[in-house]
Image: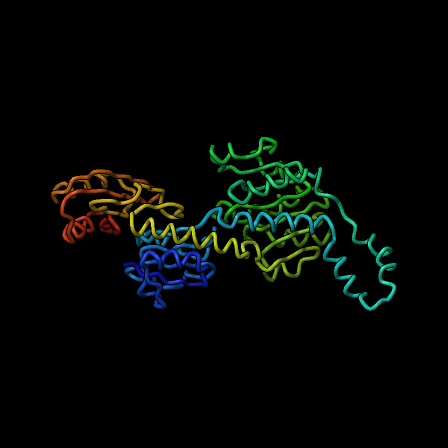
Amino acid sequence: MYRIHCMNNISKLGTNLLEDAGYELVDDAGAANAWLVRSANLHDLELPEGLLAIARAGAGVNNIPVARCAERGIVVFNTPGANANAVKELVICGMLLACRDVIGGTEWVHANCDDPQISKAAEKAKKRFGGCELAGKRVGVVGLGAIGAKVADALIALGAEVMGYDPYLSINAAWRLDRRIEHVTDLAQLMAACDFVTLHVPATDQTRGMISADMIARMRPGSVLLNFARDSLVDEQALAEALDDGRVGRYVTDFANPASATMRNAIVLPHLGASTGEAEDNCAVMAANELRDYLENGNIVNSVNYGRVDLGPLVRGARLALFHDNAQGVIGRVSQAVAESGLNIENMSNVSRDADAYTLLEVTGEVGDDVVARLSSLEAVRRVRLIRA
C-alpha cells in the first residue's frame, strides 16, 4: 500500500482517512509515495523517484516547485475553498477594524486601567476612536474565486455596495454570484471608485505587483486596502508612501514582513487567515481524498499542474496513467503501443495544460511491467503508472 509523509502537522481527520484505508504514514520523506504539506518550503528539496503526488492542505502553492513536479510527472494538488470561510470571516473582521479604531480604543483602556475614574475618562477619550460604518460603503473585491465570492456575498449582507473584478471568472462562478454585485472589467475603475479594496487572487506572473504605484495613486483619499491573498501582489514601497501622506487611510494585511511591519496606519496580522481548527480539518480531509482518488483510481481533481480527469472508481481491470508533453502524435503512439501489447482501451481521458498533458487509459487484458516499459520508452512520455483494481 502507499506510503505518505507529512511535511507539516496535518489534521488527524485527514491522516486518519488515509490510515483507515491502509496507507502507511512514514517519517522518511524519501520513502514516501506522496507528501502532505502546509507551509513547508519544498523548493530546495530533492524529489524522490517514487514520489507520485504532493497535496497542499491549503490553496496557495508558492512553497512547492510546481513546474519541476510537472516535468517529473508528480501531481500537485491544492484544496480550493476548504479554508474559504475562515479567510472570509477574518477579512470581514479586518474591514471592521479599519472602520472602527477598536485596537486603539483597547490600547487606551489598557494604558489607563489604573485610573479610578476610567469610566468618565473613557467618555471623553472615545471621540478619538470613532469611525464609520461598513454599510453603505463601496467595496471592491479583486478576485471572485472561492474566497472572494464569499467575501462579496457577506458584504452584500452587511449592506455594502460591492464591485467585483476578475478577468478569469468562469461562467459557473459568475452564476453563483449575488446579482447585486457589480462586475467590472477594468481594475483601475474599481480602484478609483471604492472606499475599500480587498484582494483575493493567487500570486502568479500575471498578478504579482498588480496593485502598482499607478493603481495606488488612483485610490480614493482615505480609502482602505486589504490584502489576505499574497504580499507580492502589492507595491509595498508605493503603498508605504501613500499611507505616510494620508492618500490611503489604512492597510490591513495578513502578511507580516519587514516592509509591512513598519508601515504607518497598517494593521498587520501574523498570517491568521486559515488558522482555525475547522479550516485545517477541511483542508486535510480534502487533501487526503484527492490523494486517495489519484493513487487508487488515477483521477486528478484540483491539481495546479495537470488538468482534471475523472473516470470514476476503478472497479475492474487496470488503468494506465501517462504523463507526457502536450505534443502532436503522442496519443496516437500511445494507442498503437497499447494495441500492439494485446490490450483493449475501454475508456480514455486526455487533458493538457500548457506544455503538460495527462492521459488516463482504462484497459482490459494482461498488463505487465513490459507494457509499462514500452510506454515509458515512447518519445515525449515522462512517466507511466499502472493501477490495478
